[in-house]
Structure formats: C-alpha cells, structure tokens
Length: 311
Length: 309
Image 1 (tube, each protein chain N blue to C red):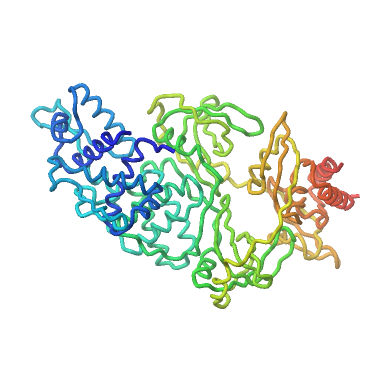
Image 2 (cartoon, rainbow over the protein chains, first blue to last red; image 1 turned 180 degrees about the vertical axis):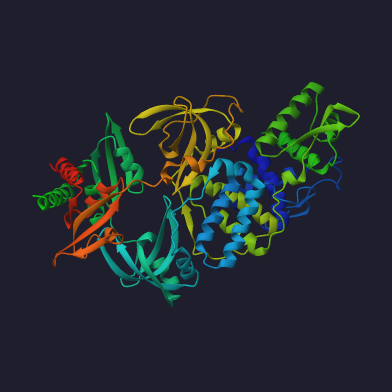
C-alpha cells in the first residue's frame, strides 16, 4: 500500500529525535516502532542523511550512522533533537488513557501525579480539546478496578462474590485475574476460575464483594496452557426494524446481518446457554428464531411459563 | 511524493526552526536546498510546502521580516509550537504517558497511541513500563468517521450525513463537539433544519461525512457547553414497581429493592426502574410476577403474547 505523501515527511521528522534518545536499535526494530518496512526506513535514513541547515556543509547536515543496520545512531540532530508536538488526536488519546489509569490506581500519590500530567497536556493542547470534547464519563467507573489491578500486578488470587446475570445467582469464586478490559464502556475482568482451571470473563459491576487472596505465581506459568473451551453455536434470527439496535447492542456475537424491507436477518455465533435464552426472551419485541429449532422451543416454553404466572 | 520534495520540506522545516528572526521568501529560495526554477515555480513550490507543513500540524508564523519595510512577510517556526514540550518529566511520568498511549486496542486510537508513544520515547528513551494490570480499552469496533468529524469541528465547517434512528434521515449539522460517553462517541451540534442542538450517536451515522461549507462558516455560541446537551446525563424518570420474586432469585433487582417475605417460595419486592423496565423484568422470566403498576402489568402480558407463537 502506498503511504500518503506527507506520512513520509512526518516519519522522517520523528525518526531523528527518536533515534537520538534510543541509539543502537536496528533498522528492523525501527520499522516495527514506526509501523513501516525495514526497506522504507533505510530509504528514509539515507534521505535524512542529505538534509540539514542552510550551508549544507558537513557541519550543518544531519549526521546519522546507519552503515551497520543492526545499530543505528544519530550523532548530529541539528534542530531536530526534540520530538514533534502531539496532534490533537494524539493528545486526546493520552488524556483519555491517563484518565483510565487514574481509575486503575488506588495510590493517592500516583493518582495525583497522573492527574497533574493530564492537566499539563490539557493546558498545552486544551484549547480545542476542552471546548470540543467531553470525556468525563468515557467509561463506567468501577470502584474495584484499582484493587483488581493491584492483584494482577502482584500475581495474587482474588476471592469474589459474583452476581451472575445468566444464572441469576450469587456465587463465591476464587479466580486468578489476568486482565481488565473495557468493552463498550463497561469494565470486564478476564480471569481463570481456579476450581475448574478455565478462563472466564466477569463484568466488574456485577462483582459484589472482593478480597485479595494469596500470591499464586504458578498460574502465570500456566496461562498459556489454558484454552478457551466454550463451543459456539450458530443461530439465525429475524426481527423488525429494531434489529439495527439489537446488532448495535450485541455486536460482539453478530457474525453477519442482512436488511431487507424493514426486516433484519441476523446470524449469531455464541455459546448457547442461559445468557442467550434470556437475551432473546427479554428483547422487547418479537424475535423469530429460524435456527436451531431447539432454541425456539426453549424460548416458547419459557414464554408460556411466564404467561401462566398471570393466569 | 518524490525524494526531492520530501528532502526539500525537511530542509525547509529545519531552516525555519533554526532561525530566530523571520526569513523572507527570497532568503528561503537562496538558502534552503531544493528550490529551483523560475521565481513563479519557486513561489508555487513554497505555497504547496507551507500547506503541507500545516497539514502536518506544524505552525508557521508569519511576521514582518524587516521592521522598516513591513510589506514583505517573513516566516519562521517557533520551537515552542513545534516541540512536544510540557515541562520537565520524571521517568515515572514518562512511564505513565507510555502506559496511557499503549492502553488502546481500538483501531484509530491504537494508531494515534503508537504515534504518541514514539514521541514519548523520544523524550526520555524507552521508558520502563509499569504493570497496571495490563488494562486495555476498547471502544466501538471502529470509529472511521472520527477524523472527518474532528476536522469539521475544528474548522467550523457544516456537514451532512444520513442518520439512523427509527428510520434513516438526512441531517445537516453545524458540528460543535464530541463526547465519549460510556464507550461510545456522540456528536453534539446544531441541527440546521430544526434550529436546535441535537446529539447523535456516531455509530449510527450510516454515510460518509459530507462537508457542506467552507471553513469558519459558523461560530459556536460563547455559552455553549457540551455537557449541557447530553441527554443521556439527565436523570431518567423512574417508576415504582411491586412484584413477587422467587426466593433467592432476581438478584440484581433485589440489590436496590425493599423486600418482605411472603412464604417459602416468594418474596414481595418493590423497586424503581426506568425506560428499560420491560427488558429488566422479562430477564427473570418465571421468577418474577409483576403486581403493579397495573398498566405495566397489562403491557407486559401483551408483549409476552405477541412474542408467543
């Protein structure tokens, strides 16, 4: 793919200060960091080698050592020794990322350092950032995030009480936490359920109680061996115009969808079970289940059962 | 872009950065390597190069080159505008910045995050990365419209797009701002047809963004604040519900309900729910029997009948 015309100038201007501060990287490593190819980076370096300040004698040119492609360094960066200013989108990326970090730390000193950094970036790039962008509720904050982050970084197990939506039951679990991630603004915990040695995902706002357990570094070694076991089934449903909102809400299980004359035909790939049954049952309009027939029957039985409650 | 042009723009950037006083065009043409041809050709090259630098976000200051003859403009780039400079940073702070840049999994922001990371690493060397529980942040799957929207907002250009709510509709908007709320981007702007400020979920924009005016074609009112218009922040009206709930079930309703026991099988619970009450009740299927308000009970039964075959 050919790169946009100015991308090359931008990369060239960014290469010099980067190499100045990080001497000794190889051309291949530089290509990785700059999301480019080694051949392209080599071309950039030889081009930069010809650039410099007016006069263009050896005293005014950039001086880059790249004869050995395994060890690139800059001996004279001229005026390009400092990195270029952030773009608005980069600044916003940082401000948002910092905001998330404040949520992940419980240490008040750490928190204030991060907040202060956020303020410094906003002060420099803030004019349009603050008037055009609001990110104060970017994610649903979880009061447990900091404690879980601490458990992850110290390889500790966690004992938690979990209110499972699909089974509608509160259970105690011992888990080894792997990662916190945010999907559609909601915080989730990926962890290994210790009793079954299987990976599970927990919505953090459904964890009702949490206590740090013992250190269990042996799990770190086991991580790569733990497979995701759940089998997914293919389901075909059809529904009316609100199918669009169904797809938006459940995009992570939708594999394809077709819209025709106000109706949506949607294919899902999901582990069959209580969660799916309830999701389809609870949707406020009628969802027709084309496949599998067994799921259609399960849901019809359930509806009949609920209606019987009101006879 | 030819090597020649790339080289010329880099040389121009370096020359304008190195100078303290403003450089006139003729000085640039004689001293900066790469400008050749007739005066007109050089002028055209220079105009294009300036545009290119602006596109890269590099601010060229235009000022008087000679205080006695202020009709000839001069050019320079201020270090302060060019450099990523937010004061001295400790190793710890650089580590936080690296983490903040690397937390993104989403496509657009992981690109801007890794670009920012290169700049951060050019501040202090490859920083030691602390472990924050390997958090990652993923927003909507894609936000391909973000760059166009951002451009329209910062350039004050009106736009049009088709928008999906219950139906498709064509909207013409003066875009004022964006907000990231609970993982999704929303556009706030003046709906030109309705003459009202409206909020649009970016993911529901189903076309490209068409620019329908030149830059600087509207001004955002001084008292405008994005937060004032975020309908999702307004408290939703809630209704009090009373229901029988099977003992040990309906756990997420119970956490904010008042509960009295009826017998070994049932409790009576009362709780408040907003606009999504129907889904919340249906979720617990046979484990809940709604008792009041009566109109909601009737609505629930009607929905269940429509869903049954």
